[in-house]
Image (cartoon, helix red, strand yellow):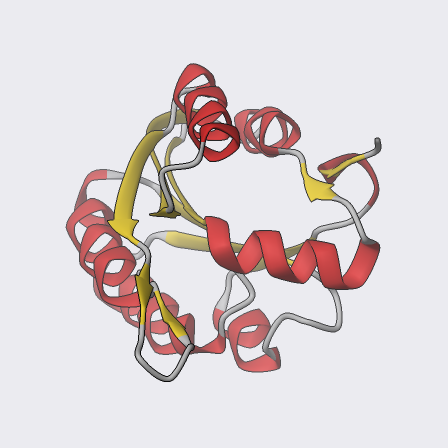
Length: 159
């Protein structure tokens, strides 16, 4: 059975799904979809911690599904912009996991990860699957992935 490590860029998924569909991403459906292809042996969800109860409830749902939730504090800059970027953390964790698994799944449309997927495929021979919102996923990321799965239909939470 194929071993799979999953990496979910929570902020990217939240904003791209909301922008494209006006609803939320269904992490349980993602888990079920990935599980059809093998055994999930590692799963991480990268989020920003604002400390509000609704977010903590959501983080608990992710933990109940089987994700290890990694949190960074929400940082408000003096100019009003916010910082909360997990790109380096996700990259390190994917590089660490690649030698241990058959497949890496990245749920993010962020084109910054294209070189990462190219690298783990070339260096470790792993499959690299990208889940992203059509039209809001960088084409470079789609090209770098062994397989691209559009986030639509059953992967969306209908209210």
